[in-house]
Length: 379
Image 1 (spheres, one colour):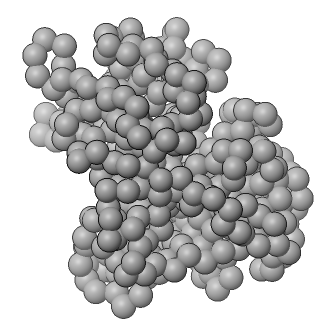
Image 2 (image 1 turned 90 degrees about the horizontal axis):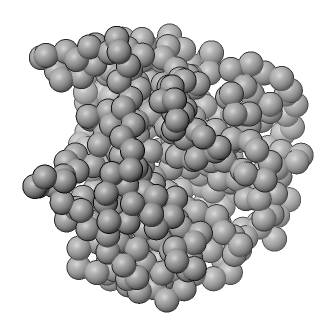
């Protein structure tokens, strides 16, 4: 990435504040978890604003109406039989007859219609990407593994899809930070793949591990810019379609301390790696609010009372969240809000922006059959 313009101001203070103005309540069926990993906000599903969730164990995509809170439709596919979709993780709905299904570890993406009939198969393995017989993974370090769940990016722009990915080997090793497979394009007609995005130069040549290697992203159609948030970088970046930087600015919460890469000792110990992950801030989702000309960024605070354990349940001791808002023209921090977790309920970094404001997931621990999105605006 090439820096074209750069000007920063002190972002330690904020002139406005976040205010909760409304909320959505979704009544989940008995199969849908409030913490599904594979989700999407739908601006228009058959004329209604909706929320979609992929329930992997049931091979179903559930569509819930945001206004009614009720289940609108279930899109069921099969993992057995002649027309199967095994190993589907991520999905992206363009409209009711254009749905992308990511068979992630087969390095294939299917474009299907509403009846799950395959319209197009997109292969992400190149001619020279030989499969290692022992691991089942491509031997090339430049192979692109599509990963676009939750805070990562999938956008169709013209004849291309812009899609988030991950390095094709263990991300604790410094070599993983030298790849350019964090975001790529795939041309829907020619099939050409173009790996566009790697790590900032200051992060290259170091081991960061799985969680600090992530980059969250959003795209503003109105401004034709991408906004990028690396998990271990205090800066945010605005780029053009080639991922050339048009602006970078400081975007960190009060009390933030820079995340160091793995030390040699930490690279040798999984327990030390967990301590490293839990002991530092990690930046999460990034959102461009075209309605209010704002950029939002979520930071997850270090874990309080760290113990050497890893529990994958998002509701188990979740981190406190800091949500920041920046003016999209001056890039000054406008607001900063700390969301503290409690025994009654927790906030999660699963957010979307609409005309109402920034909508943040909230789970009531007394009633996990309800999924809430609390709506905040900067005033």
